Length: 159
Length: 159
Image (cartoon, rainbow over all chains, first blue to last red; front, side):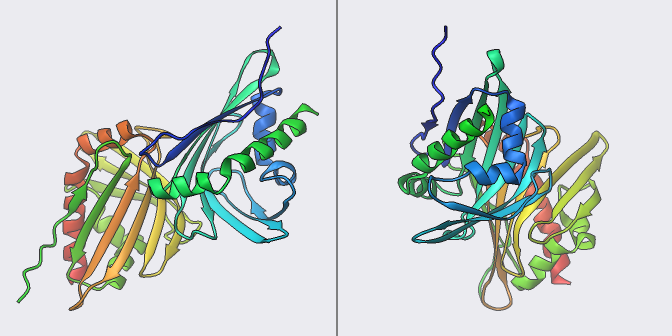
């Protein structure tokens, strides 16, 4: 029996503006992809615990775009971007902007990969405009929010 | 009398995936912006000398996108991307993909700034997915192609 650890691994190398991450799931890549494509599913997992996810639009296709807000007790935080490429069950590439840091846009690569035994791996690279901006994003608690979101995604695709 | 040098300046720092550049023009920011917005104008300046520019679509607006090809004696080279933000006479942010390096997409920031005496400055940052990819792009003769394109843009906005 293999012991699997479905936890988020973040790699934040010094001196470059990107973050690499991986997260495995007990579900095929197609299910994890579908949880990214369907806004009704996205709404259930994306973001930290305890936030309400208000999706303005979500068109997970090449040339499409998205805008959503996290509604919290301490304010509303808006996010928007465009999808440069979306390839079913394989790959997505999007821009990402937080309205608290306008024009400080990141580029995010997502690779969906099947593993053995019906499991899969999500690999990502998020590249910020500057090293300082990336460092600020990490310092803001990004890892906790991502980890909580992927925990909910895990529950969702297991069903 | 001020001596002005309308030449491309490229900054390629070691160990990071971006390229910074600046180019000044003897025309206001609005004219340089318009030469980026209007595909009939873009067709006249973008790319190295001697290439035919075949634009499939060019929608220089927030959420829009573009695709074009450089048709040359030694082949056709396709490019496409999406515009995350376009703010008139000020700012544009787009993705950029060369079909010879699929998924190796760059994020490009352009700032249009007025200077004194009807002149302006274009500042850019192009961020690749990897340092190696950026280095390969520079090695491929990117600077010459950019410089030639901006020379033609200079002629266009002077008129």
